[in-house]
Each structure stands twice: as C-alpha cells, then as structure tokens.
Image (cartoon, rainbow, N blue to C red; front, side, top):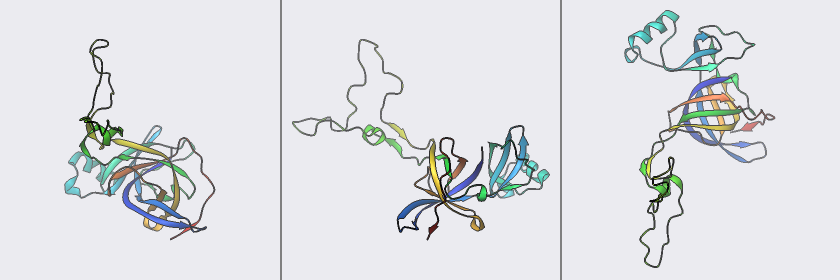
Length: 212
C-alpha cells in the first residue's frame, strides 16, 4: 500500500481549466526517510526533531542509521515488486494529479457537547409550554431490557478521535515544495499530522490540469 506522512497546512482554493473554483487542502507531504524494512512493512519517519527532544534509545537508533531524528514514525505495507533501502526517501511524487487517496488524522476536539450538536438531533417541541427543546428525553424502558443499550446517542466528548476520509482526489502536487493539494477538507487542525495512503476503493481518474 503506497503511503506517506504529512502535515496539514490549511485550506485554499485553485481554479480549474474551465474556470471552476476548487476548494483544496494543502498538505506538506514528505520527504520521509525509510528507517527499517520489516518483512512486508517499511518504517518511515517525518518532520525533523531536535536531538534534546528525542528519547535517548530512539536517538541512538537514528544515529546508528546516520539519519536526522524525526518526530513521527509509522509503518506502511510495501509494494511487493519494489525494493526499498534504508535511508531512501519517499516524496510527494508518489502520487499524481487524478489519484485518489485515503487520509487519516485526529479530528479537532470540541469538548463536551450536547446531543443536538454531537448527533444532530432535531430537538423537541418549541411551543405549547414544552420544556424539552434540547433535552435528551427517554433513553430506554424500565421493564425490558431494563437497561440502556450500548452505543446510544448521548451527550459527551466530541472530536479528538482518529478519523479517515476516503477517496479524496489529488488535484495538484508541487515536488519542489513537498506540497500535496487534495480536493475538500481533511481531519485535524493546522499543523496536525496526517497519514496519506493510496485509496482502497477508488482508482485514479484522468489528470486535470489546474492553475492558481
């Protein structure tokens, strides 16, 4: 499974050849040095780290490999037909415009939220003296089963969880600046880390040239 690590920069917009505006997310993708080859997996790193911020056992591994320490380390399935060498860098040119990718990140945390914001409840009656505009209401019976079912939609902590968005189209790449532009939004806040993989469910489409 082709993949790379990246960092969310923010959202912007570009214009297609026919003049249509396309909202895109800019991602700093790579370069990611290969740190280890483990059977069917490869281990890669991303984002330079200061030596005094890295634990000594981990720092020792980087010094042994003669590679500058990285903040983020993850494993990916490697392509069976390709040979990988330790120290080789994976760059944004793994992808091309028209490819589809699955992007995994940690969604923005929104704290404790009520059911209407968290689960999009419609709410209760607004008139005739109703006092249940935004309340939870009944959550289960008292006789059978005599308990609340697991997974019932309730108020609680919202966001700050691992989220994957599938089939996002790559609009443009900039190898010189390690930039990847994908159509639409991706999980996480600015400067949050992302895992970008080749889409499992959708094949690449024809290349679409765009201009700023």
